Amino acid sequence: MDHQQRELRRAAAQAFAESLNKLEQTIWSPEDEPTPASCPIDLEQAVAEIEQLIQAQEATSEKKLPPE
Image (cartoon, rainbow, N blue to C red; front, top):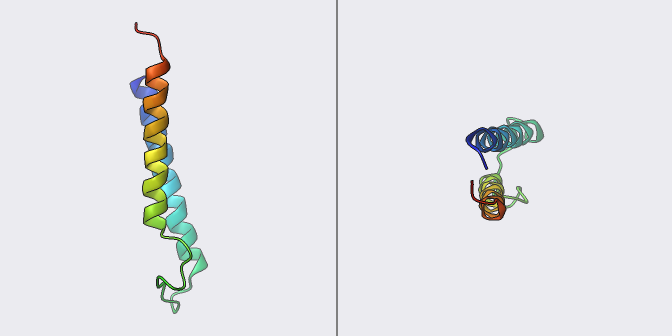
């Protein structure tokens, strides 16, 4: 995978994380306190898992490419 494609994936992952943060702010009003009991998912953990998935896919794609 070339550098440009890796940068695009990184930017997409970052934009996705920002979207999740914005969604979290929209869901909870200022008086709501997000607590582990009220939040069914851990957004930071979800973002970390998505980043791991992207990295694993990149590694798999790089293994499939024939040597130049």
